[in-house]
Image (cartoon, rainbow over all chains, first blue to last red; front, side):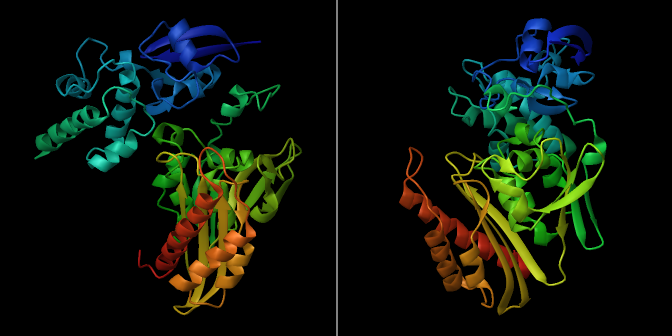
Length: 160
Length: 254
């Protein structure tokens, strides 16, 4: 059985016929060919590497059917810097060495971008709790947290 | 979704209810708090309408999975799935929620939480019924509630989770207590523990005694996650903390 879907990904409309059982993450990778969204835990909803924004909110794209995103807006990591200019969070990950192998990074960037919109001035504990849905096996999280804190500090000092 | 992917469920059809905004709300009026079935965990956590006496619902919703999961997961989804180690069924059972269900012919019925949760993955919802909302009665007496769990990692499924709701006529007399447990075989009440707290001041010794009674009423088990004794210890430790928190909240001390 197939479903017709029209999904806006990073501002571009993808109209496709897909198997009803197709997961959003597979649609993003195989139909939109946006391979920045990763599959880390064989679709179990555990690792968070496939985190994207659905209508602006961080969700795990392996836990959604592509059909559920029909007529919705999806943003992937490629959509953060469409013109090649990195966001402050991406810059901070670079300067604070917030990644090593980089496999989990796309999902963490998408989750923390949404997190910082909702919590502009989080404590370190709140950042740690915000990261619970993203597994990183390289960094030990310290540099990731430093990168997020750097953006928070930059935003706060800009305000004062 | 996990159940479909792991083929525990093999549905012939899947209907996405996300677009039904009528099922997404938190509303307090006339002594009643009503939460729509499609209200997401994130919306429960950020709602200003949930009074302190029902705050166990927020305690539970704020610690489900992770923030990506809470951006999607709904109260109704959790209650109707009734997983053996789910947080919100225990909280709703402690808060004596009442489920409003609708049939395909448009007729509705209300089922109390006590009658709704039948066992792991089993509820009183009939095959073609949809959960519309959950009602919680607000009381005039001093009342407080709380929920806490322990899992292998932060915000994981509970190995043991406990919810409590207490009403007090005055500082020295608890006249209503509901204590529920999750993690073993779905949401279940600790009836002996509840009865032992009524007509007491619910002080530390009395709560400790109540949780000893709870342990005598409940069978735990040993597996790779925890031993039988460790689970009993969790029931006692978390139970004491949760009930003391509920009591403090009843008197607005926490």
